[in-house]
Image (cartoon, rainbow, N blue to C red; front, side):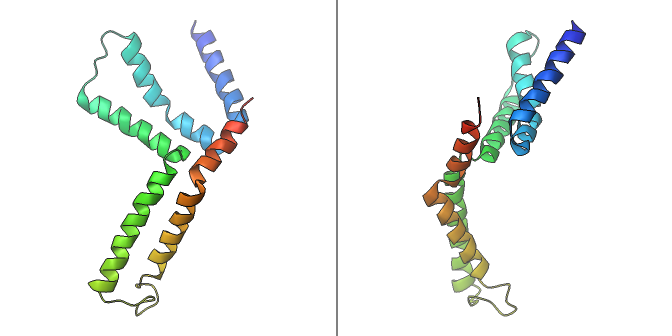
Length: 138
């Protein structure tokens, strides 16, 4: 039984990683403990779930979704709001110019981040990459 389980696992893992881009394969490989916990909870009666375990697994799956780019528009909107807050503080509180005194402490980089995130938000950057990945499946 253990030989069969090991052989099937490694064969499926090798074939699956050959079909996927390396970044997606690494991400799914890192998510194996999340699936292991869920299977243990489903199939083992002595495995009990509490709030800490549930929160850990939920955060883990949220991280996987963020890495896949599923929530890229939401992330972009959040980063735009953060950068707008940083720009307003630099302009009105610190009274720094666009480039700042040394060329790096102004709000020019913040503006570039806002523009890049606007591009992601308006073009659906994460959705485009996810659709390309889904198109590669047989």
